[in-house]
Length: 406
Image (tube, rainbow, N blue to C red; front, side, top):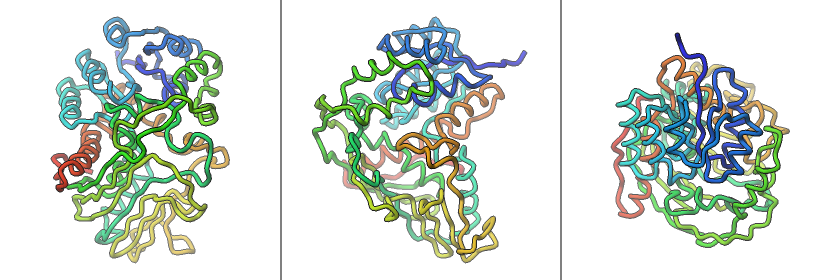
């Protein structure tokens, strides 16, 4: 008899789990939050109370051994992703890994090889800007058809809020997640950038980069404040800590132990070149002035993100465009209710990668399908970031050893 429901164990009951994954998982008819695990008992207790988790664990390896689960959502700090993933694979569990997959290429390969050898399903976050998003599937197809001609260059940079706001100079919380040496720093917290590039242009061939720590000392909100928050929530829809933490005083000093700025020149397999900046020191921009969203320029047309649309293409090869507006552009509209958008919360009704990844993994397990954002995808994106660090360290061009058929 075919399985009707995937039993899920969640390790890491932190901000992302409470705000995005758990509230969605509890709505799925074909999934069950069987077990939750965290070092902080107040968090697992809250997840049982608010999201209906059936079992609570303080030790991850106990959960793997004792709980009857089919899949593990690894939502912990980056330094734990590799050992937790490998242990889950050894236990025969499907996995979802919150970004990054790993901060070391050999470790990422171990996860890839383990998943393949065991015949398991794995989704590697983020799934935004990937084939899982139908809009990106359209964009990639148009580029492959030649709607832009030969790509001349592209650019992608860090963006920030349009005005200063409390607690938005950098991450307001999360020493282990964002600042510690084994987190990989903001470069590995923001794989959205290389994913965005690959999602449109295909695989990467090489990278030349400069990476550094720009702001060594900062202050964050103490971790205990999140425990207080979790202890008092009762409604799954009120579990987004971002609504609270941006207004809390930053009283705990923290040292930046990993890269917080990276400037990379990527060469793609199609021969195109472009510059990419990744960082997490926010500064305001003028509304309408642009904030560094991906722009791609070719001999036959241009593709731009932003300006009131998700993406827009203008091309001399108009016959390839699905439709052309009066202004001469093909526009992909922004989805969802933008009036309810609160940075950095996903826009209601728009593509939500936390939700779509969860749904996709469950579906792939039940239907025995290969995930679109799989270990090969995650390995390639990981190498684009690892390669940037290696290039910065050596001063030499880094040649990619992985690729993708996309």
